[in-house]
Length: 196
Image (cartoon, rainbow, N blue to C red):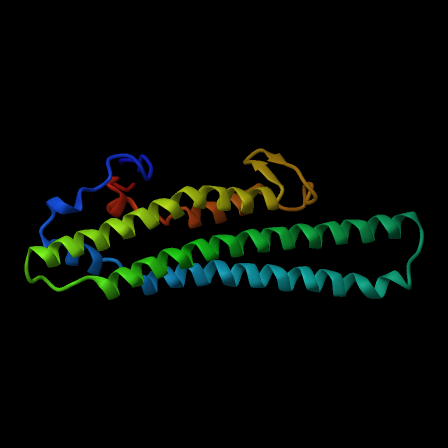
């Protein structure tokens, strides 16, 4: 299994690829699939915000009925947990936004790709693919930071460590699994890598 070396490793020279093959490369990518992946991240973010609100609502009735040190500690724990869930939700929405930008770039390339006609059309097709690859490289550089933010917001410093406001309340595996699913966005073909 090969590993994608990054956005700047051996960028594709689209000028060396025949125009019909450039169209095939573009047609093999579906912006709707990318939008669906982005929407999934958006659904995760929205659900997490809803859960944080539910935590707030669920602890509110107890405030008037329970007093003392244990009550204060409980309210602090719930408030911290809700804040942590909101941070994960915000990070998930940042990943969603990056993936939507990738879909927009691909859709724009679909709309501007010229039909094969002559050398000028091929030059324009090369420009479309080069611009798409450049946009993917920009987004690729930002994606690891966005995914790390999901992990960090979840309070997971690694697979064997819990940190942050969540303490031991959220398994690190949840954040790592989310990051792994999100990392499937791989512009290897357009950026010259081999994929994984």
